[in-house]
Length: 412
Image 1 (cartoon, rainbow, N blue to C red):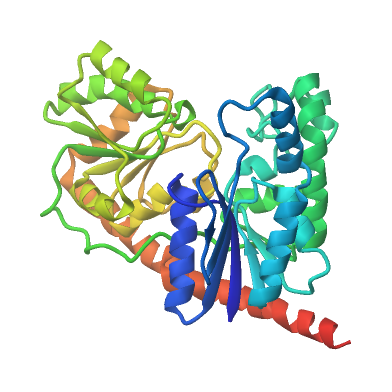
Image 2: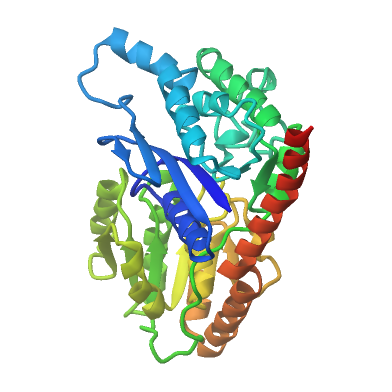
């Protein structure tokens, strides 16, 4: 099968990019011909299997007129992008087009897919497709069941100026998505429910995958007291809460060490917080760690903490933790409870309550039997629900279900 994968970002950005590259490798390893169309801030890339266009939107020293034109091109319509993509589709002739993140030049990408009679599916990687304020919450903190439109202004989710700037582009993209994309793939039940509430009935639930399972869980390779956090160091990811929780953790387990793998705009503030709390010997910043080098961190980890305060889709770090059979402390604010609830793979906590965060982390650090019990449950859950083979079967089955009606339509 020939598959065209479209994704907004090329190269190292975050978990979404790691997932897409793993997804491409999964398909290729199973005998499919896979092509990639994406965007980059660097030079254009053109190979027999990749077309990566340069995105000049963030170039420095732009005058206001140039920036305004580039804004219109990026968020509304860029004929150059649409033409290049349509031309490449004509050359590679894919059987299926699989959209992932469609943030950059999204309307232009969708415009290029009009009238092709090729099945189009899209995997959701962020709540931004569902919410212009990117929170999916009302100002009161309650879950918002709606989508784009005047409700965002009526309920105070967006100020008037932002509403006027954001709504036209978002509205056009959502309108086109509902008419061009044959299936939206939701990686968790909450997103599937929200998509249906927002008027997209053609939604399927296919959970993400991580990597090949690691070693069968044991206590032999664990660095007891090792706590691991992995992710981009943004404020909304909540790593500041884990650092504050370390004040309580080291009182009970003096040798405990928090390993932070990742970089980002909040890094300097986090390091300052470590100094302020006198935790320099208990918190280690490793910077960005290549995914292949993360294996050792997972193998040594006693527990993985995922403290995100923003809504997540299917965080890669949680799946990789399961693949290595490591217990999880998961934020109850990030919207992924349904993926792991009742599976005994860890604890859900309010990460802003640092005492509670410390309490449940210590439960795992201080109890080897509980560690092993949760480790084996995590490993078992991953092999049963989130492994590569299961994901490949589900994706190919979806492709094939869409190919038949499209072929019949083409013949008529």
